[in-house]
Length: 269
Ligand SMILES: [Zn+2]
Image (cartoon, rainbow, N blue to C red; front, top):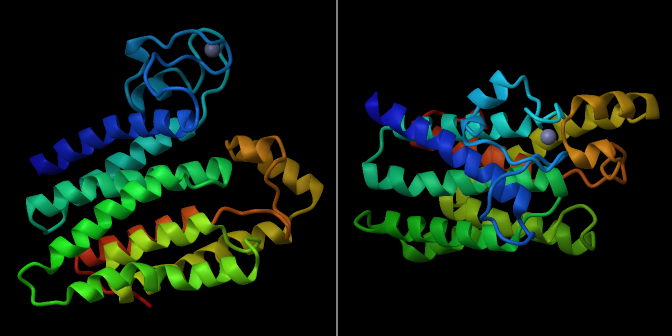
Protein backbone atom coordinates (compact mmCIF):
# COMPACT_ATOMS: atom_id res chain seq x y z
CA UNK A 1 0.00 0.00 0.00
CA UNK A 2 2.86 2.37 0.87
CA UNK A 3 4.45 1.68 -2.51
CA UNK A 4 1.17 2.50 -4.28
CA UNK A 5 0.99 5.86 -2.47
CA UNK A 6 4.65 6.64 -3.12
CA UNK A 7 4.34 5.73 -6.81
CA UNK A 8 1.04 7.63 -7.11
CA UNK A 9 2.47 10.82 -5.54
CA UNK A 10 5.56 10.53 -7.69
CA UNK A 11 3.18 10.22 -10.67
CA UNK A 12 1.55 13.56 -9.79
CA UNK A 13 4.95 15.28 -9.88
CA UNK A 14 6.04 13.50 -13.08
CA UNK A 15 2.65 14.38 -14.60
CA UNK A 16 3.18 18.10 -14.07
CA UNK A 17 6.64 17.74 -15.62
CA UNK A 18 5.05 15.94 -18.62
CA UNK A 19 2.70 18.92 -19.10
CA UNK A 20 5.72 21.21 -19.36
CA UNK A 21 7.46 18.76 -21.68
CA UNK A 22 4.45 18.55 -24.02
CA UNK A 23 3.97 22.33 -24.14
CA UNK A 24 7.62 23.21 -24.69
CA UNK A 25 8.54 20.41 -27.12
CA UNK A 26 10.25 21.96 -30.13
CA UNK A 27 10.56 25.34 -28.38
CA UNK A 28 13.70 26.86 -26.82
CA UNK A 29 14.61 25.12 -23.57
CA UNK A 30 12.48 23.22 -21.13
CA UNK A 31 14.05 24.95 -18.13
CA UNK A 32 12.93 28.33 -16.81
CA UNK A 33 9.94 29.36 -14.73
CA UNK A 34 6.42 28.57 -15.87
CA UNK A 35 4.39 31.56 -16.98
CA UNK A 36 0.68 32.03 -17.74
CA UNK A 37 0.25 31.65 -21.52
CA UNK A 38 -2.23 34.58 -21.53
CA UNK A 39 -0.69 37.28 -19.33
CA UNK A 40 2.89 35.92 -19.09
CA UNK A 41 2.79 36.41 -15.30
CA UNK A 42 5.07 34.05 -13.44
CA UNK A 43 3.23 31.20 -11.80
CA UNK A 44 3.92 31.24 -8.05
CA UNK A 45 5.44 28.09 -6.63
CA UNK A 46 2.45 27.48 -4.33
CA UNK A 47 0.23 27.48 -7.46
CA UNK A 48 2.24 24.65 -9.00
CA UNK A 49 0.88 21.89 -6.74
CA UNK A 50 -0.38 19.14 -9.07
CA UNK A 51 -4.20 18.92 -9.49
CA UNK A 52 -4.88 20.77 -6.20
CA UNK A 53 -3.75 24.19 -7.46
CA UNK A 54 -5.91 23.88 -10.56
CA UNK A 55 -8.94 22.95 -8.44
CA UNK A 56 -8.34 25.70 -5.84
CA UNK A 57 -7.91 28.34 -8.56
CA UNK A 58 -11.07 27.12 -10.28
CA UNK A 59 -9.10 26.36 -13.45
CA UNK A 60 -8.15 30.04 -13.93
CA UNK A 61 -4.94 32.09 -13.80
CA UNK A 62 -4.53 33.88 -10.42
CA UNK A 63 -3.53 37.09 -12.18
CA UNK A 64 -5.58 37.49 -15.36
CA UNK A 65 -8.31 34.90 -14.69
CA UNK A 66 -7.78 33.30 -18.11
CA UNK A 67 -8.87 29.67 -18.29
CA UNK A 68 -6.15 27.11 -17.60
CA UNK A 69 -6.51 24.02 -19.77
CA UNK A 70 -8.06 20.92 -18.24
CA UNK A 71 -5.07 19.14 -19.77
CA UNK A 72 -2.92 20.05 -16.73
CA UNK A 73 -4.86 18.26 -13.97
CA UNK A 74 -5.90 15.44 -16.36
CA UNK A 75 -2.30 14.58 -17.31
CA UNK A 76 -1.21 14.83 -13.64
CA UNK A 77 -4.04 12.57 -12.51
CA UNK A 78 -3.54 10.07 -15.35
CA UNK A 79 0.18 9.78 -14.60
CA UNK A 80 -0.59 9.28 -10.90
CA UNK A 81 -3.14 6.55 -11.69
CA UNK A 82 -0.75 4.77 -14.11
CA UNK A 83 2.12 4.92 -11.61
CA UNK A 84 -0.11 3.71 -8.76
CA UNK A 85 -1.32 0.80 -10.94
CA UNK A 86 2.31 -0.09 -11.70
CA UNK A 87 3.11 0.14 -7.98
CA UNK A 88 0.24 -2.23 -7.14
CA UNK A 89 0.98 -4.73 -9.93
CA UNK A 90 2.12 -8.21 -8.86
CA UNK A 91 5.59 -7.87 -10.47
CA UNK A 92 9.12 -7.48 -9.11
CA UNK A 93 10.37 -4.00 -8.13
CA UNK A 94 13.00 -3.72 -10.95
CA UNK A 95 10.23 -4.30 -13.54
CA UNK A 96 8.11 -1.63 -11.86
CA UNK A 97 10.98 0.86 -12.05
CA UNK A 98 11.41 0.18 -15.79
CA UNK A 99 7.66 0.41 -16.34
CA UNK A 100 7.42 3.96 -14.88
CA UNK A 101 9.38 5.85 -17.58
CA UNK A 102 7.71 3.76 -20.33
CA UNK A 103 4.24 4.67 -19.04
CA UNK A 104 5.23 8.34 -18.70
CA UNK A 105 6.60 8.47 -22.26
CA UNK A 106 3.52 6.76 -23.73
CA UNK A 107 1.27 9.29 -22.00
CA UNK A 108 3.37 12.25 -23.16
CA UNK A 109 3.31 10.91 -26.75
CA UNK A 110 -0.48 10.54 -26.66
CA UNK A 111 -1.04 14.07 -25.33
CA UNK A 112 1.40 15.64 -27.78
CA UNK A 113 -0.20 13.79 -30.70
CA UNK A 114 -3.66 14.86 -29.52
CA UNK A 115 -2.60 18.52 -29.35
CA UNK A 116 -0.54 18.74 -32.54
CA UNK A 117 -1.05 15.44 -34.51
CA UNK A 118 2.73 15.01 -34.28
CA UNK A 119 4.62 12.29 -32.44
CA UNK A 120 8.09 13.64 -31.60
CA UNK A 121 10.85 11.39 -32.96
CA UNK A 122 13.04 11.78 -29.88
CA UNK A 123 10.24 10.50 -27.65
CA UNK A 124 9.47 7.36 -29.70
CA UNK A 125 13.23 6.75 -29.90
CA UNK A 126 13.56 6.89 -26.10
CA UNK A 127 10.47 4.71 -25.76
CA UNK A 128 11.93 2.25 -28.28
CA UNK A 129 15.24 1.97 -26.42
CA UNK A 130 13.46 1.36 -23.10
CA UNK A 131 10.94 -1.17 -24.42
CA UNK A 132 13.52 -3.09 -26.50
CA UNK A 133 15.85 -3.26 -23.48
CA UNK A 134 12.93 -4.45 -21.34
CA UNK A 135 12.03 -7.07 -23.98
CA UNK A 136 15.62 -8.39 -24.15
CA UNK A 137 15.95 -8.31 -20.37
CA UNK A 138 12.66 -10.20 -20.07
CA UNK A 139 14.10 -13.04 -22.15
CA UNK A 140 16.93 -13.62 -19.63
CA UNK A 141 16.45 -16.92 -17.85
CA UNK A 142 13.09 -17.72 -19.49
CA UNK A 143 14.49 -19.82 -22.33
CA UNK A 144 12.48 -17.72 -24.82
CA UNK A 145 14.13 -16.57 -28.02
CA UNK A 146 15.90 -13.21 -28.38
CA UNK A 147 15.01 -13.12 -32.07
CA UNK A 148 11.32 -13.40 -31.21
CA UNK A 149 11.56 -10.59 -28.64
CA UNK A 150 13.30 -8.32 -31.17
CA UNK A 151 10.97 -9.19 -34.07
CA UNK A 152 7.87 -8.36 -31.98
CA UNK A 153 8.47 -4.64 -32.61
CA UNK A 154 8.74 -4.63 -36.43
CA UNK A 155 5.95 -7.22 -36.80
CA UNK A 156 3.57 -5.09 -34.72
CA UNK A 157 4.54 -1.96 -36.67
CA UNK A 158 4.22 -3.64 -40.09
CA UNK A 159 0.41 -3.26 -40.59
CA UNK A 160 0.58 0.45 -39.72
CA UNK A 161 3.66 0.95 -41.87
CA UNK A 162 1.88 -0.66 -44.86
CA UNK A 163 -1.16 1.61 -44.30
CA UNK A 164 1.17 4.60 -44.25
CA UNK A 165 2.89 3.37 -47.43
CA UNK A 166 -0.17 2.60 -49.57
CA UNK A 167 -2.06 5.74 -48.48
CA UNK A 168 0.97 8.00 -49.00
CA UNK A 169 0.69 9.05 -45.36
CA UNK A 170 -3.00 10.01 -45.62
CA UNK A 171 -4.56 7.29 -43.44
CA UNK A 172 -1.73 6.85 -41.05
CA UNK A 173 1.29 8.88 -39.99
CA UNK A 174 4.75 7.36 -40.01
CA UNK A 175 4.99 8.29 -36.33
CA UNK A 176 2.23 5.78 -35.57
CA UNK A 177 4.25 2.84 -36.91
CA UNK A 178 7.35 4.09 -35.08
CA UNK A 179 5.25 4.08 -31.91
CA UNK A 180 3.98 0.58 -32.73
CA UNK A 181 7.60 -0.70 -32.62
CA UNK A 182 7.67 0.10 -28.90
CA UNK A 183 4.24 -1.43 -28.41
CA UNK A 184 5.43 -4.70 -29.96
CA UNK A 185 8.57 -4.79 -27.81
CA UNK A 186 6.55 -4.01 -24.70
CA UNK A 187 3.72 -6.51 -25.29
CA UNK A 188 5.24 -9.19 -27.53
CA UNK A 189 3.94 -10.08 -31.01
CA UNK A 190 0.55 -11.38 -29.94
CA UNK A 191 -0.11 -8.61 -27.40
CA UNK A 192 1.20 -6.00 -29.83
CA UNK A 193 -1.09 -7.05 -32.68
CA UNK A 194 -4.06 -7.25 -30.31
CA UNK A 195 -3.26 -3.70 -29.17
CA UNK A 196 -3.12 -2.43 -32.78
CA UNK A 197 -6.41 -4.13 -33.64
CA UNK A 198 -7.99 -2.76 -30.47
CA UNK A 199 -6.71 0.73 -31.34
CA UNK A 200 -8.62 0.57 -34.65
CA UNK A 201 -11.79 -0.51 -32.84
CA UNK A 202 -11.37 2.28 -30.27
CA UNK A 203 -10.60 4.77 -33.03
CA UNK A 204 -13.71 3.79 -34.99
CA UNK A 205 -15.89 3.84 -31.87
CA UNK A 206 -14.79 7.42 -31.15
CA UNK A 207 -14.40 8.84 -34.67
CA UNK A 208 -17.52 7.49 -36.41
CA UNK A 209 -20.04 9.23 -34.12
CA UNK A 210 -17.97 12.41 -34.43
CA UNK A 211 -17.99 12.11 -38.24
CA UNK A 212 -21.74 11.59 -38.16
CA UNK A 213 -22.18 14.93 -36.45
CA UNK A 214 -19.64 16.88 -38.43
CA UNK A 215 -22.02 19.74 -39.28
CA UNK A 216 -20.80 23.26 -38.53
CA UNK A 217 -23.26 23.78 -35.66
CA UNK A 218 -22.14 20.61 -33.93
CA UNK A 219 -18.48 21.43 -34.66
CA UNK A 220 -18.83 24.74 -32.86
CA UNK A 221 -20.45 23.07 -29.89
CA UNK A 222 -17.83 20.31 -29.69
CA UNK A 223 -15.07 22.90 -29.97
CA UNK A 224 -16.27 24.63 -26.82
CA UNK A 225 -16.31 21.29 -24.99
CA UNK A 226 -12.90 19.95 -25.93
CA UNK A 227 -10.04 21.97 -24.40
CA UNK A 228 -7.57 21.30 -27.21
CA UNK A 229 -6.19 24.28 -29.20
CA UNK A 230 -6.17 22.31 -32.49
CA UNK A 231 -9.96 21.86 -32.21
CA UNK A 232 -10.63 25.40 -31.09
CA UNK A 233 -8.89 27.25 -33.89
CA UNK A 234 -10.34 24.85 -36.45
CA UNK A 235 -7.03 23.22 -37.44
CA UNK A 236 -8.61 19.91 -36.48
CA UNK A 237 -12.15 19.16 -37.62
CA UNK A 238 -14.29 16.08 -37.52
CA UNK A 239 -14.61 15.47 -41.22
CA UNK A 240 -13.56 12.61 -43.46
CA UNK A 241 -10.53 14.66 -44.46
CA UNK A 242 -9.51 15.51 -40.94
CA UNK A 243 -6.37 14.15 -39.45
CA UNK A 244 -7.64 12.47 -36.33
CA UNK A 245 -4.50 11.50 -34.41
CA UNK A 246 -4.18 7.74 -34.06
CA UNK A 247 -1.44 7.88 -31.42
CA UNK A 248 -3.81 8.38 -28.46
CA UNK A 249 -5.80 5.29 -29.50
CA UNK A 250 -2.60 3.25 -29.88
CA UNK A 251 -1.40 4.36 -26.46
CA UNK A 252 -4.79 3.73 -24.81
CA UNK A 253 -5.07 0.20 -26.20
CA UNK A 254 -1.39 -0.50 -25.46
CA UNK A 255 -1.95 0.50 -21.82
CA UNK A 256 -5.07 -1.68 -21.59
CA UNK A 257 -3.29 -4.77 -22.98
CA UNK A 258 -0.15 -4.02 -20.94
CA UNK A 259 -2.00 -3.71 -17.63
CA UNK A 260 -4.07 -6.79 -18.44
CA UNK A 261 -0.71 -8.60 -18.84
CA UNK A 262 0.72 -7.12 -15.63
CA UNK A 263 -2.34 -8.11 -13.62
CA UNK A 264 -2.76 -11.43 -15.50
CA UNK A 265 -6.30 -10.46 -16.54
CA UNK A 266 -7.97 -12.17 -19.51
CA UNK A 267 -8.62 -10.01 -22.60
CA UNK A 268 -11.99 -10.08 -24.40
CA UNK A 269 -10.23 -10.27 -27.80
ZN1 LIG B 1 -2.66 34.92 -16.57
